[in-house]
Image: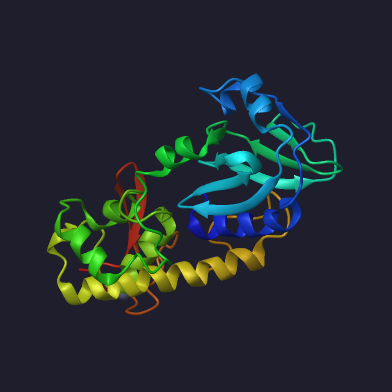
Length: 267
Ligand SMILES: [Zn+2]
């Protein structure tokens, strides 16, 4: 599942190739990808507009179009967004934006991802539930501590809640908690202030490092695995020794996903 670093890498890769390009047409090959909009509506709303800017908000990709419209893409589990010079004929291709000699392609094997064309107001409404961007100035240690004080969630689920911190997912939430020495099941409001300060710094450090790795590893569609090029300390390392204390990393189910942590370092 792409998280902030992977989505950021995708945004910067496609921005170079689509910014300033005009959408001459849109092929929606699977209506489910644009539901509840219709393929005809998506094509009509986007065609003829120029892509003015590509940006990321949480795990969303936003293409700002001329005339105040925007394309919002959410990759969900297996979605990919990339630029191609070829006719894309594989069945997993859901939506194709024709850009005159090149195409912006949305491919999604599991068909859970979404592409919508929205007005600025609809876009704002769709993104309004998102919490602060963790690498922005808005995301201060004070703000994190205030949000945590009002929550009863376990630390890991708090971090994965997109209304708290936008863009964190399973891998980097686990990594940040390890770096801060916080047990993933500990209720977030009971984490002492000094460790909350460490958590704030850890979230930013982990995301910066992972974003650098994702940009380095991203070469072409389908080649970017989550966490690729990033040295995971706990994620995916069940049974292996902790790099800090040597105890075995544990994997436990939490919120329907696997959580990895060190029983020695995380309390
Ligand atoms: Zn350890």
